[in-house]
Amino acid sequence: MIHYDLRCGAGHDFDSWFKDSEAFASQARAGFVECPVCGSKDVSKRLMAPAIPKKGRIRAKEAPPPEAAAQPPAAPAAPPPPPIPAQMVALLQRVRAEVEKKCDYVGRDFAEEARKIHRGESERPGIYGEASEADAEALREEGIEVARIPWVPLAD
Image 1 (cartoon, rainbow, N blue to C red):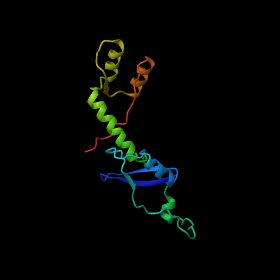
Image 2: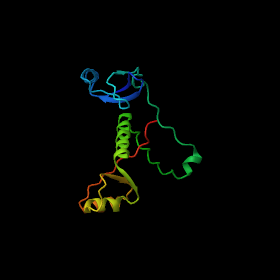
Image 3: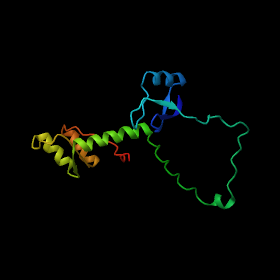
Image 4: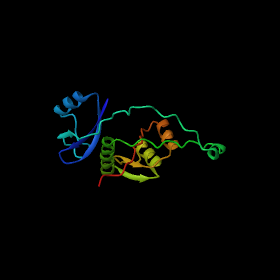
């Protein structure tokens, strides 16, 4: 797999992975590579630094200073989650915009409102809001389809 930094004709930068350089070229020619921000298919590779491993000896780990060795080691911090790729962020922003445009926000009353729709007591075409994992699981057990969508900030 090869990672490319890309730019569309409108100047939006993003990145993507391809099997090899020919895969990028053939997908770009076929119009399958598009900007996640504006949808432009005028996409080109940006200049990138090559990933060349360093040569030479690998240094052995140095022993910690004596005062550091006397202290118990700190618990390892959980690694931060990997960043969401730009294409995924743009897709989630479009999903959020559509949800906000076509559905009613019901806040913490989501589970109650979903049940009303399921029982035919409400004519709302769609809702979104907040529910605990326990509420969402209870809705699924009642045969009510629900889904969680990562709620990313909208683009400026």
